Length: 273
Image 1 (cartoon, one colour):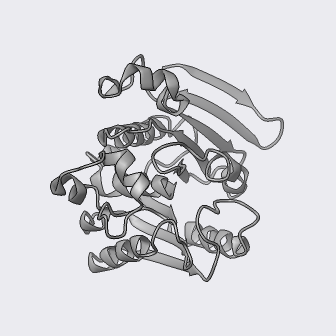
Image 2 (cartoon, rainbow, N blue to C red; image 1 turned 135 degrees about the vertical axis):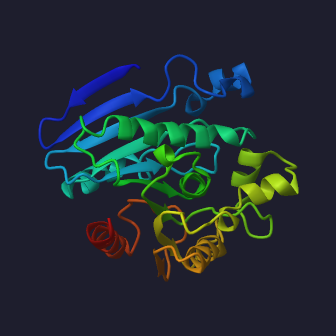
């Protein structure tokens, strides 16, 4: 496995790892010309930010972008210092874009959590305190891992979702995310398989969900219905709905309720994990 490491001068170290040795899993499903043309489809990787004073917890972030690009800044690297200041190891996942091949992002997310757990001792991480986080379509990927994990080794211990896409039901999904993940005319079976509110079980990991009531890009019913499905299955869940802010605020300072969500998430991570 290719490893490049660089140290920040102060309280934080940064480690970059490719997800796969050689060719990524399922690469054959994506056309070669599309791989060449789209940097987000090549070289899936994680960037791990390690705190100076670790508390054993780790979060893997899946940036949004409608499964068509990745918002690696405000929904990715920009949050690293905030998590590290709490003693939490933080990884940003550069996952491959599906181009209608639905299995590819989940394959990368599972590999990312394997890598974090495989390196848990080296990185001072408790392998039983590794969570998945995602924003928008990245929230769909995070909730997909939480509801579709293939083994205990890839089951996240908790999930954090920013204004997530959850369903593939055309009545209230995000159309671009649906088409990029499933293609133009997916079968009803495939649509239901990736409508994650339908996949919740009592073994689904606990969740922290946040959204804006005026989100006109991803209907709030996505997050609300997932929250209700978690409660129905007796899964511990917190839901925070802010009166305004629209969609895609991430760690941006322009979001009016940034102080509220960061405080509430910090408290949840401290008390629940």
